[in-house]
Length: 340
Image (cartoon, helix red, strand yellow):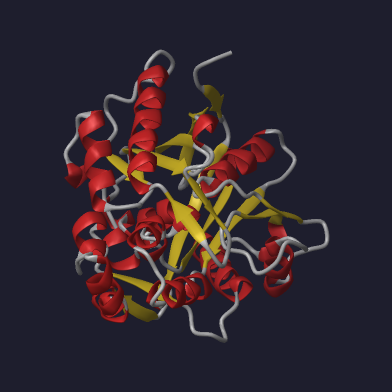
């Protein structure tokens, strides 16, 4: 059956959402300096990262900070802000694109660092940049079903290794203009961490209700962005067009089931400032209602939506309606409505 997949939640609320910024700043100017000879030889120009993507800088973790360290830091912060004892957490979900190995799951190391109970489930949800929104949905369904009282969703992205490998390739005297274009999107991504605690609405009137949302697949575009921790190739132009088209289809189709005409703020996936502007235009809203972090944090992959929400949470007042909007390579998209 074509169209959107829908879900609705009755008893799930966000109790806290937090962001942890990686401390090592890598400017687009510094990247341009490293690639100056390649640009000159291939006839390409400096400044494309900022001009085309709006990314002035992105960040790295120090070399001695692991994926689990960053995720656990965010998770501990979110639990403290929610006032939830780690012993109460029923499920830990790690949603990061970045991962140091294929097995075990990234979640188990975070579970260990946080000292969670043996009865607390832990697993990864990997779905490119959409993982965190999928994690909210899965956690909410478990809470609504009465299986657990609290869920912790974490995401830590680390791109230092990928950036260093990419820059070494593109600094090579054999690097071509096409290779720079194919790996351009790689240099717009950044490192950072985010976490969210969800709990039962009937026990937490102070929480922010997750009402439900929609998802849609555009898997005919699954080859537009393919990567690992060494090399990522992206058809940036085609991915931009296909992603916007899929999001618009999802938004329009959702109108038959949800009234989203009164949304106050949209927290969109942060690939570029032009992408945010195109999304705002498609929904008929001003960009002032679509807060951003991409300019100074880069594209934070699956952490982008919760990270941006946490960074701008002071804008939100009780009674506001908030939309979380994710798009992930593949392509997949998912929206979630929050009653703040």
